[in-house]
Image 1 (cartoon, helix red, strand yellow):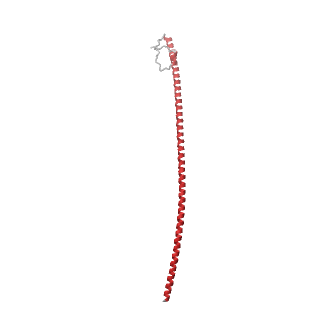
Image 2 (image 1 turned 60 degrees about the horizontal axis):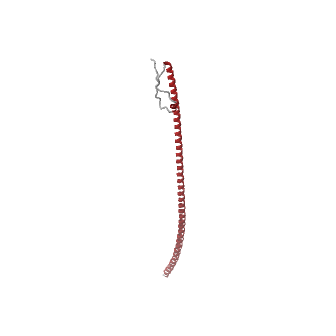
Image 3 (image 1 turned 180 degrees about the vertical axis):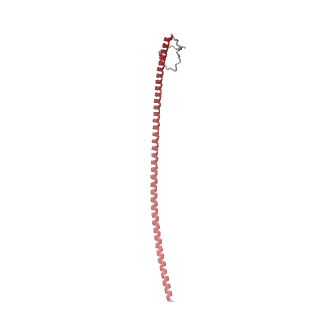
Amino acid sequence: MAEFADRMKSFTDNLRGSIRSRAEVLSQVHAATGELLDGARTFVNQVAGEHRARAEELHATLASHRKECQHKVAEMRHSHQDSLRKMRDDLDHTLSETRQTRQDTVNQLRESFQHARNELAQDLREASTAWREFTAGRDGPVESSVSEPTESAHEKPVRGVHHRARVRHRT
């Protein structure tokens, strides 16, 4: 039976050696795991630090860009307001000139009409006089209810002709 005891002794020795070796390997694995975790933490911290630095740069860039955009918008708004103000002033000036031109044209038309009206009135007066002279020569003297217009009456605008020549009709 010694053989069984020797085998058991050899088995337990191998088992003890295996346990020791396993403990050594486990301690190496724990040490390697700790080193790996430390390396990973260091790497993650470095990456996080770089991300923070880039985020701060991006934030500063965006803030600067925002200020530039606000400045450009303010300049554009001011420019557009000036442009609108100038257009309004130009339009007011153009409308004023157009209004004055229209008023001048209307006044000229009135003067032309008044002059033509006065000439027509004068022409009608002369025709009336000629007719009265013609009828006076045929039938004798004709009394007229209207006296001959004076020189100053020809210059005044005629509002309407209110005189009637007396015409004798033969029946």
